[in-house]
Amino acid sequence: MKFADFILIDAIRTEIHADTKEGVIREMTQSLLDAGGVKEDEYEGIVKAIIRREELGSTGIGRGIAVPHTKHPSVERLVGTVAISSAGIDFDSLDCEKVYLFFLLVSPPDRPGEHLRALEHITRQLRDETFCRFLKQAKNQDDVKQLLQEADDNAFGK
Image 1 (tube, rainbow, N blue to C red):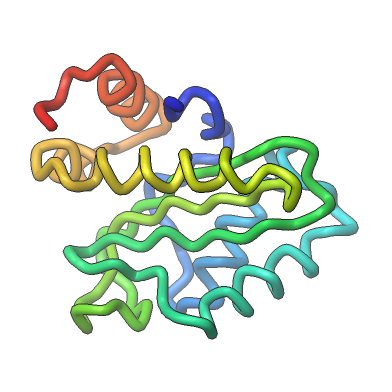
Image 2 (cartoon, helix red, strand yellow; image 1 turned 120 degrees about the vertical axis):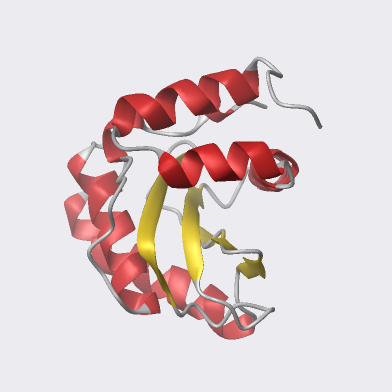
């Protein structure tokens, strides 16, 4: 699995405006909607599903990273986006630190293997300090797209 398989480039946000956990989830889901990855009439249901998943345990995994995700019957394929916060956001992270890098995933419920492979790919790439540092410094969608492509091409040491 590669980022190119599920990240919608047009949904990437290099400066998220939200300052709360729910706000980040809403803004990132809106970016998926704007990019055609989710349907308008399903927006609220997807947001609520992600929030319900967060209630089970924060997807703020530490080191300034969060990977909010859910399975939802309204999507026909795995879709995701990336968002960056220069100020950092309290996301109830496991290490109690602010989050700067967000990867959001929504997948069909009947494809759990694909969902897990995407989560594994994201977490594997995010273990690389260089990748994370460059991602935090990205100024626009093209910067993020290039970094994701380099990660897909194994340009970063894992």
